[in-house]
Length: 357
Image 1: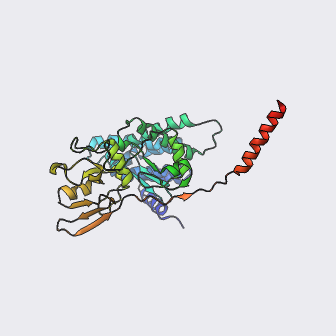
Image 2 (image 1 turned 90 degrees about the horizontal axis):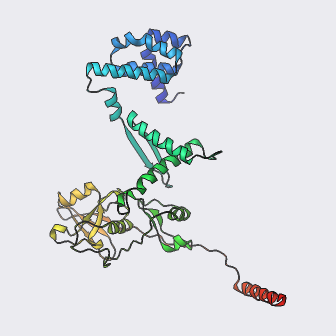
Image 3 (image 1 turned 90 degrees about the vertical axis):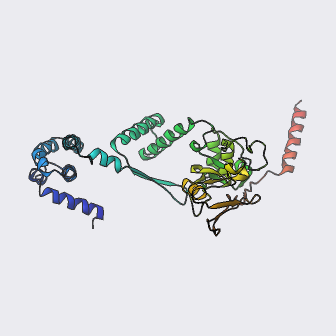
């Protein structure tokens, strides 16, 4: 009834134990724990040097009998580093650990995100130290948050601090929140999401806006501020933000790369006298940008609707991308005090003040 991963781990330990008599005896006698044995078995298996491990096995068991599993791991790592240096192994432990690194970010349907990853020791030291520093900074006496919640808040604080030092014009280093005026004012619930298209609560948006750089994104292609014509080749920070508002993702075929991670493409190429205007720009990821330039796909954009169409080199239609759809606002019905009652109350207060005078 074990989980498959646990069963496999125990089987590996059992196989290694047959070749580690000193460790097996100490384990069976209860002088070392199963966790100690896991470290020893993993060390022998990963080293790939059974004869050399036999020479140091007794020393490692002695450490295990008097110390913690972390102590055994430290001594075993020292031995592994010496072994790798001696045999000049191109696939050293450090290299294998570095190559096994990775971070997975999974977005859930409700807007939450699951993070899981594996960091090499150097990266782990940086990550741990940054989170620990922010953790201590945010922690308060009798903190109602769990340690896990405080670590997540600390990680968020580290990221916010990093982004806040990237400069106002660095769009790719900013998190952009989109909303219409009625939603922001609390009169309705309509557009309220991040630049990745993840919906957030209006109250969350208003909280973020308390300490944020706020700008109005004008998406009219005739705007004198946003349309630069042939004055410059690259899109400005303001134009970049405006295009993020229009398109939540790459406009390429079946592509879901967030527009905040895309490059801005001139539909009418700059080299062909295209203008750096909003009506001539669309976000495309690096891969789809290659389709246009290197593989000669063509792209069109309707000036009125903003609908983008992609065509293969042979002229066949491949994909249609639509601008971000603004949801229909849902009015918020808040009972208002009766105007006549308010006026009557005002008249009564005036009479009272007159009588008192």
